[in-house]
Length: 589
Image: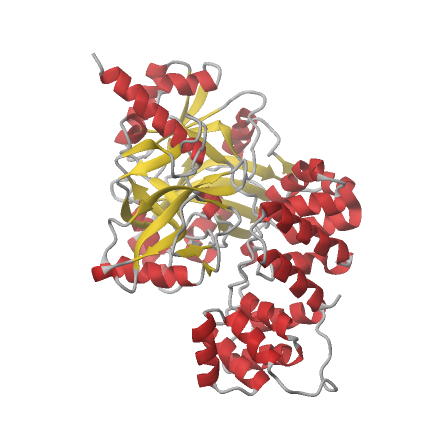
């Protein structure tokens, strides 16, 4: 398959802001793709070579890309920089320069998807002495044979700036239409993705074996399962009502959520964003290896910083000292951790995700050899609001954030990759106005003035709507940022700048700069109000009104542990608003 087919499809997708058109163009591309390279096309369309959990990145900085472009076009660095300054995009710069290139075509050969993928794979895995020159040589070889249009997307891909607005959910829709007979097949394909986190493998199976193959899709140790998420409520009575009068209340620890995979003596650890973080927690790997009595297992736990002398849990911020490449052994000594397991998803060849929570918990307790460093999360079956409040107070006293309340019904399966009312977060701050923080996605920015000239004066922030797979604006925030934050955010967001509003972003405001949804920030506001301007939960309370956060302030916390899809949802904002009204009603005479 020629790479130009992909490049042409990307051009069409990039040229529209309509979600349905994007899906149609992607379906068209998939139908042209031979089954043997479908996984590679999917990965490239995601801007990667492998699923995130494999941890292979192309790692080509813009400076190296410019050097490769110099070799392929014969242009000087100054002329390339001048063109880049005019266009503001390295891909469009490459396209323009190659369109001016005068060369014979006798010694070039068309780029194929196989060649592009294999070259980029070799480039990504090149390391050690001379790696930069080797990478530059490999990439310039592709650019030399590339057409201007191909060069645009090649250089965007290797620099991590593909930015065509294709999200995982759009790919799933396209796979269902192209190979499953229609969108009605989406649910089965999505489940395969949720239990494997590998869109390429899912695409290969559905392309080669159809829906029958997808129905046989199995959990595999080593492939992280996309985590189940929770809704939130702040009133015990409402929580119990949701669960039919009883629920399992479990400590909500202030730590890092980890999914541990054990295969014999081999242990892998994944973050909630499905990144392999095994190297940061060798002590946790050893705990799993020794204390889990199962040959193969996948379990979830909260990793919490702890004071070994007192046994007290330490704040989440201390745990972040473990996020390092070097000095791990020193960090283990300075910042010891304990592991509180709260779910098991797979044991000795058996997929437990479709089992009820009580069944999973029973299995979890059976396979754990408990000690002070590894134990099941504290929990209690509650049937009254007083029991829930009392257990909540105990959790707070012991250093937790609050409780996770979970259904114990026959339908209490593990909803991989989904947020629902089978799990509900209960934290004290939900009970009074908006004293709790929210995690919002940066989707746009407004230029600063005065002291902030040359930086962003305010950011446009959004909630996530999982039903529509969209990001809905909820506030503009320009408070709480230090000078260092402003500089850091500007650099952080530069790689996510796009020419127009992302197709998944719902906004009536026109930002000065638009970003692909990628960066998540923790925000604290005064209250949630109705808004005729912002799009979060539009029409849910009042027709033609959405939700807005008044007087937002950045807390200083960058939620690098969360993907955009893990951000606070629009439904959660609605529940916070309703909680405010209920609180006001209680205070009125």
